[in-house]
Length: 610
Image (cartoon, rainbow, N blue to C red; front, side, top):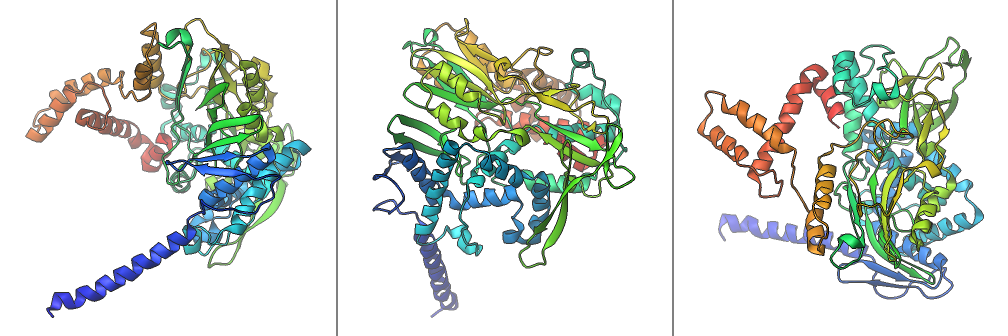
């Protein structure tokens, strides 16, 4: 036997055994999709999976339906649910070791687990029963699994029973991921590194409308940018952490469609992850039927439709969070309204795989929990104020009422229970109505201020409760025959109530509005084409400027000239085959970096550009 073949056969055997072992691991973890499972239900529940794997769950009662939804979620997404629970409660280090400590310190400081427990304890008896039924289904799936998911087996993690408060924890994690807190940090970096005049150049806040000048306070260079950048990189690159970003939705009335029916389109733009953030399912019980997308770890459907109403969500980009800089007193407390107060404190022990546990002290002021772990070595104490901390327990079942809605009035009533994160909700009804509601609680501030950390000691920037939901922006059957949202302002600047000063770039919104205004009647195919539209209209101005400047540059190579020709002939479309579009995007990003990074530094620019 030749030398190569002597080594090839053992190699084939090793690879074969490895594949066989992996196959066994994965095969034993595949959820059972045939047969019967005994469970705590009042009558048989049927789960059918179609050819795309979407479960259709049919039960007699809503209680049994939620039990089965929890069961199916856990069957297919238990590792995802467990990881999100550990992230939100600061328990990743138990599995991943000391590398996860910064995230655990951060989330222990945020105190989401404590708020989740409070929400669950304060639920009405009826709402608690519904949440408990969902959780009982999750735990029944865990009990009846032949083997835990392969990820848990490879990490030697035993599944733990879920609790009702874990449903609230899932909601709080999603809401925190979509909250507007990074903006305050980003603009603070600009203030510290580039100065007040440069900040004014880029700050979207309208001093002429809101009457508050740019606030300067605290120590210059008080942020430890290297540590902050490291933590934010870990957090924002964590696959299951929900991140805010652009979203699209629009609804067109029947008088603008060829078939006379209202049409609704939605693209939430949440990150593409494996597994997906979303879980598609069809839920059916007596007097209840809804199809759409849920979050594993929580009951009901988030975005979807029933036989009477369809609805879609996009992020409002509401200013729903503030960082307060607390001034420390001489006796170890903090100053507030002329006197020194004691911090609220609790001790937390973080277990670390392969290491000794770490103990931390979590502090809280009148404004919220302190998050010192965001900026290790920080010379200031930042307290975090967020709408999620004030959410009433009824928020956890708001989606149930939306899922059951039969009319525009029902949609508005259901969304009056929804607290966070603020969402633009467009809807259409089978009776022909189209509408819009800003769902979520809008903070009332003593002083509206730019998106920067503010002093906490005087109390002048405190929140004064929330705007009455009846004053939230709404629309019903507008004369133009359509409603669109794309993270642009829901109200003209300066109108009350104040919602935000930081929104996504307006290009997507303007494109949608231009197309919908451009015709009296649309076919379904035309509306579908808009859903997948990739035209970047404002790029024509920037492209022309790039071509003009680069065209005057001497000494360009043949390859560079060819690239410039590609850019010049680009039609503004960002489809996957567009070489000109790829060049434009790279060039645009590099121009931004070269504009800001020299003054902000690499870490500061990364924080700013997030």
